[in-house]
Every structure is written in structure tokens, then in C-alpha cells.
Length: 369
Ligand SMILES: Nc1nc2c(c(=O)[nH]1)N[C@H]1C(S)=C(S)[C@@H](COP(=O)(O)O)O[C@H]1N2
Ligand SMILES: [Mo]
Image (tube, rainbow, N blue to C red; front, top):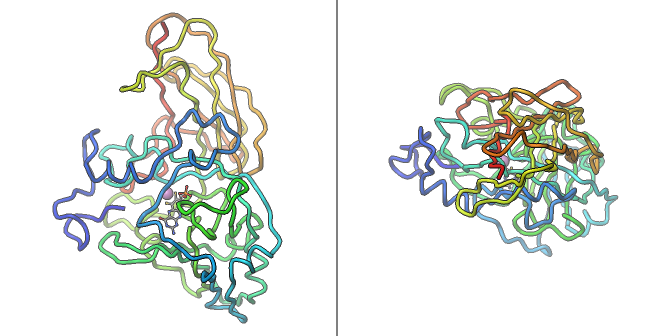
């Protein structure tokens, strides 16, 4: 999201990585545009719209719903040009979906990639309403030689020295999955500007970058798409020269509502003696959450939390555990999730160039009074 030093559009001398916990002014500016979800909002099944996280690479485009058209073209027999009314008139489904940014947890990976400096708040669950994409692709007559579908947003900017529209592709098989939607409502209202008005793609189970906002074109292509957000960004790379491998499905993560009360400046938690209910949510794009464990001694011993029912197969699973502190003083709480595919959250996730997919344990220092 910030160019590398020496590339046009990037500020001269702006580092690609910093080996320092302190943020650069550029990172702070990104952080105040793109806010996270305050972790106490983990209490909601469906995140109130203003508390859902935001990630916007460029500027929020202002689109006129009257003049807006979604073009469907490329390797199709019958190209389509759809108005918002056309899309709203199609069969619609409503489904709670947990979305997480692939950069969530980035600030804990040092040296830190200079980009959106997420702590752990880049997550939220929306109740999205939209029309399934697959029948629309079928109506357009997707040709057998199509290998990917490219989605183009109406936002444009510079990244990595390249001027671009925000664009991402999906393999044809992924684009054709039942749960992939063209969403036009969030929590029962038209999409707000910041979440992609009038229509966005929604790819449940995938990191957020796949869910292209402000959609204006869908194009079937015969070769893998080579756009910046596909081949440079959103990949697990060792270094600048490593092509790496693409990110797709969300790795498991559990987060807890930080217990007790916070100190204003440091956010340190102050917890009363006696029983405290620890609660939170866990999710994965690799299948349902089958286990959440909690540690109160910095990851030495773990106890199983109780699991509730997610609001949909694509939404986070509630969990809770009553904790009896061993005594007053400092404790480090942690939680970790396991999904049905057998993925367990690691203590430390591997460092990578872009600072992605850091699903290491959440650590919550608390002071018991
Ligand atoms: N057109 C467009 N779509 C986009 C983005 C963007 O900058 N432009 N950001 C992506 C990223 S990286 C994420 S994590 C999600 C965030 O969606 P939200 O802001 O609605 O939470 O949108 C994705 N879709
Ligand atoms: Mo993201």
C-alpha cells in the first residue's frame, strides 16, 4: 500500500521495512483512514456497520447509482451490462460472513513491512445480501477456455510504482462456488460508500483482498491474471525477488474480548479478583472451528473453551471460558483456535515480506488487582 523506495509515486527514502516498533508518519496516516474493529465488538454476532474494519488502498470512489453499470465480458458468449436495478431484481441471499484482512497482525512481524499497520483488529462480520455470481456467469455463457475471472473496482491509484485500478482475479472454479456473491446490502441497508457502494464481490472464507469493492467490470480471461494485487501484493514472499505463493483462504484465529477495564493511554487491562468470563470469537476459511483453547500462563498450559454456534458456516464461532486467576499481579492470557482441517494457530507465524497471515497467538497482558 506504500510504494518501495525509488519507485515513482513513493516518497524518496521511504523504507519498505522498519526494524522498530514505532510507526512511521505514513503508517499512522494509513491507520487513521483504515480503522480496525475495537475488540470489544467481538461480542456481536454481526458487527454494527461503523465498527466493521475498513481497508481502502486508494480513495473511496463516489458512484452514481443511476449511471452505474456492471459489465460482464471477456471469454463469454453473451456479454452483459447490468444496472443496479437489474442486480437487485435477481434472486438474493443474505448470509453473515466474517472477513479478515490478510495483513491482520502485521505490526507483530518485525522487521515490519511499511503498509497498513494492523494490530489484531482487521476483522468483522457483516450480514451481506447479494445475488450469487455463478448463475450470472452461466447466463453470460462462460466459455470453456476461461481459466480465471478478473474483478475490477472503480478505485484507482499508484502502488509499487504502478498506476492501477484495484483488480483481483479468482480461478473459474472458485468464482463458481455457491457462496460467492455480488453483494448490494450490508446489515439490511444499501452498502455504505466505504464498503463498496453500490456493489461489491464477496468471497466467503478468503482473506478480504479477494472481495473487490465498487465493482464495475467482470472479465473472463484465458491466462492467469498478472495484475499488481495478484502477482506482487497478497503473496507470501521471502524477499523482494521471491515471487512467493498467493494468499487465499483465511487461516484459523481466535481473539478474545480484552477482559476487565482498560487504562486509557496504554490499553493495559485491570481485572478484579474472582471469576472472570473470558469470551471471544474464532474463525477459519478452511472449515468450521472445532476447538478453542485458552492459556493464562503465557502458553504453558491450556484449557478448552466452550463453543457456541456460528450465525452461518461463514461466520465466526463464539467461545467462552470462566477464568479464576491464580492470584493478584500480572498474567498473560492467550487463545488459539483449531479448524476441522486440523490447522492450529501457531505461537509465532512465519515472517514474510508483506507481513501477511500472521495468525500467531493473541497475547493479552492483564493485571489482577
Ligand atoms: N476496489 C477495492 N476493493 C477492495 C479493496 C480496495 O482497496 N479496493 N481492499 C480489499 C482489502 S485488502 C480488504 S481487506 C477488503 C476490506 O473490506 P472492508 O473495507 O469492507 O472491510 O476489501 C478488499 N476490496
Ligand atoms: Mo486486506
